[in-house]
Image (cartoon, rainbow, N blue to C red; front, side, top):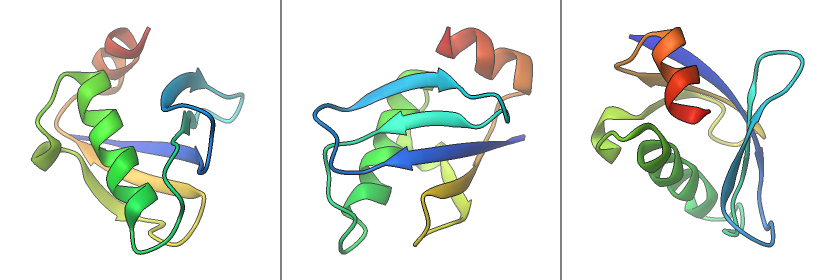
Length: 85
């Protein structure tokens, strides 16, 4: 299991995983607005698709109301980076 720091931009023009920033956080953009958990659900679904995992395996650990979120996934760090490149 690895924990993945994610920096989210809601209300973007398209859903995309942009890559890692200098601090090691994954940059993710979603079209969903940050209301009623819509952006969180969109981020979870997008991460699961990008990593080739079912959505139930991508769990938000913290940051439900913040742009900086922490997810737990059943992969190791090198495999995460490989799948996202």
